[in-house]
Image (cartoon, rainbow over the protein chains, first blue to last red):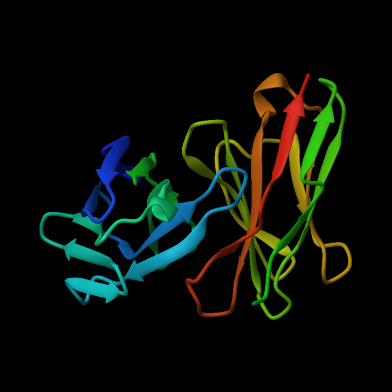
Length: 112
Length: 113
């Protein structure tokens, strides 16, 4: 019940295209859904996060869409750039311990 | 921007040896965490620490692991007798009181040979 499932595992997008990464969760106690960006040799860096009281959150080129009834959330990267090439992790946490449960990660490559 | 600092960046140790991984969380943060990431796999929770005690730990965090905040600034993870399967990136993270915004350090790559 703690799992967060992420897809796809890898994604290749042309520069200027839209990158879409999806996550699904099972635990209805989760109430915080962040996305992290990780470059090789670095720690995960918070990109954007959403709480279940809203269905969408946008920050610059990054948008999270959240579907509470389906227990799914997704990251959209508009106008993808080669500098966006990284591994992206979705995660979820509940109120209890704030422990993050991570998805399996998506390796994004944006081709120039 | 405040950072979580981890040392060393890379540690190689022989199987059976003890290692201590060090972290300096952001100064006004109150919750501290260790996560690990085996190469190419997802990030996994190890332990959370608040008010000088462990608040939650995963199945991975067995008796070989311990954490300590010895001096009010450092936060350490000790592995008593390392195994080959302990080879991974270990990330320290912290969050402020009432917050969800994790800040992760850059990690320590532990290689057990």
